Length: 347
Image (tube, rainbow, N blue to C red; front, side, top):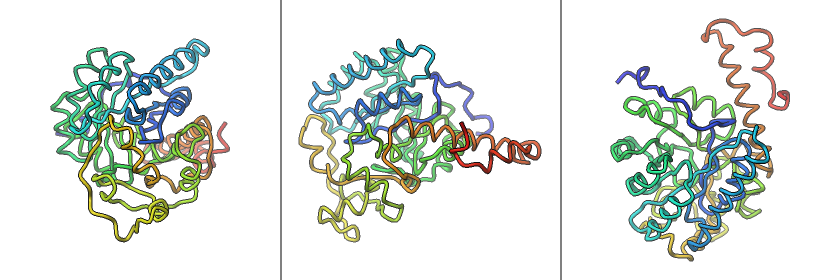
């Protein structure tokens, strides 16, 4: 298929300030982060296994839906993004039916499925008008998700934190656009507005951004974890399946702190993702993940400040691209000024 003919013809069903998801992160994303992200004008997401037991998940969903309703009432002119629930559809997750019952009750506009087929969520979510995106790490899984009826694909690419992929974000998007014109969100080492602009230019609709939101004040991450992300570089990362059984990107300092040698990682254990086990999360609570976007993070700060900076960078990137000679002519003096400015110069 000709890629030019398979670029998406749809428009976003959501009013967003930026085409960004604050990606769902295990043990990090909670209701405060979701609400802050949505109020800042992007998509706020969290994995349902973060809320254990099931009663806590209902509390979180109620907090999110009521908080967003209040925000829209209080600021009717504000751009408030949708919220998103991330479901684990792996066969070992015995709590999936209970999670789906709460999904049906609270109706998140977007549901992202991970570590399994999107089929279990399709009927419930599409039944109330929501969208189902499927996490995928390769073309084979992407085609299966599309065949199952997914509305969109969440492309987990090389450079992503936590459970990661091996394909370049650009190569992944290009390959998917050969056969899929639905919604695409791509993640993998993208942590600034310049990267967001590049991903959108490549054919993606949205960007998954996780690591950038680990050290925000609203995240559930421990303060030491947040500081480690601020202090680390890409040289402090290792990809291994030795922790959860699935390849993931981990912070070497956190492994060493637990007596795990990054140069001699354990063999991959059997994969097990049962949200009904309240102790399941504790085993890895001090094994900290991050993606390759951590090199641009300089401080622990609120979500609102992060999104402000992302918007500044994104606007400068778009202006710079529009002013390139290959985009229709030489840049004007004003465009040259913006193209070489620092984010702080944009108000």
